[in-house]
Length: 246
Ligand code: 13P
Image (cartoon, rainbow, N blue to C red):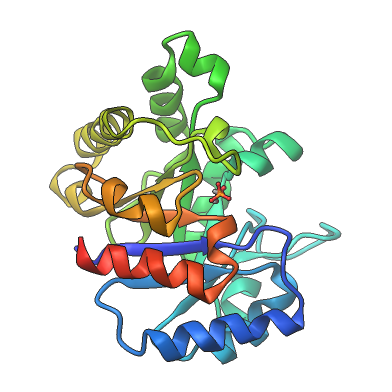
């Protein structure tokens, strides 16, 4: 499978940040992994133009419906129209800030799939869940509830992002990451069959160029979903290089 280095800019980036994507495109004219940046929606169209063909772009969320009276939302069709090829759904910040349930996340992912976007479905436990020994149950429930029935290796990516590792500089041990990724893989294969062996499973949460090599060596880690370290081409480039070498 082709691995995936994905950047989530979250609510960061103005027009002058487009230079980062131009620099990234210049540094990686033909990467041997897929590279994706998900900027804020305001930048998606411009970034899609600036990224060229070697780097994909996507949105950080979409509405489950195609159009209508949903002030402030954007649809999967709009993401596609703006040049996006992917959409992140169910990021923990949306689950928390906007009360998104697994059912909502699944409906968004279904909208993405029916629009020929690739859905990056995010799951992950809180520190309370982990300390209670509930990690595999919580993540397994999220995977079961959030990943749509139409998921294939071509149209779906699953990102495991422990909530307590996001933006904190804390990272699970490599054993802990491997345990969760192996469990997600087993659940997906049990549900979808052999095709799910090729659904890309990303780790996310305080990934940096300095820890990327060891994380990418963990079983069933097929790339990363990167927040802070995706904002600068120089930082993200180090992660892409580590993934290319893995
Ligand atoms: P950080 O890489 O900043 O920890 O963010 C991870 C994340 O939430 C990516 O979606």
